[in-house]
View (cartoon, rainbow, N blue to C red):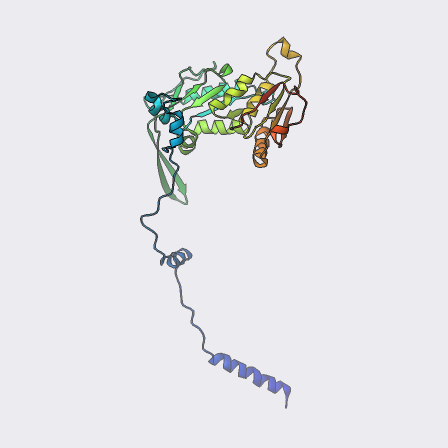
Length: 330
């Protein structure tokens, strides 16, 4: 037989079988992708009422704590006020520090900050207009009111010829003032009555203050820490040329303040001859030690040593350090 004819017959047979084979009809689905996804999840009813998330509540009691302190350390008539003070959130406190750069003195940064605070002063719930003067503005010791009452924020977005409006209400729990810590040398320590979570939540009320604080924290010119945490470095009396050992340094707020004293300019003839100085910051936990290293990197103060070792076996002979700071609970 002719092979060409056979091949033609085979191709014709395959075409006939393909033509007679039943085809599956494709169902038309004009729905969009979003509608298909909604339809796919429509069979799962959402729980109502939705379960509430567990939030931290400071209103907790401890019988052992009450037995130890109530009536023994704290008098009975002061107990309620003592408990309310413990449960209240801490204010936001910070200080201006030396960074080892002679061109940027803490007094210059503090002057800009005080000018910003005075521009945010509120009188009767409204911002107070102040004339522009070249003279430096000083915040009074009693502080300045920077936030109070309720603020309604309305934002308009224009995109593609459409205008969308977004409204948000920010309510301050109590009038918030910012004041200098009078016991801090040269008024370098400051306190904002708003706790840190409120400072982050009220994006419009504290917008300028938060931007200033975050910028200078990243540059190493501002050190955020609790007011009680500022006391040990101040009482230690570190001077230029001292060898200082911080045995439990993480997270590093006290170490930054110690470095600021080490990098401060000479205060008298005795400090003129002092050169160098070193701070050994030790932390036994490797993860916390890495956080300490990152935080101290912003200071750019020479003479900083970070180590990860047990503080009980720190090398060095007796009397190798002029000052030793050991804050174990931190």
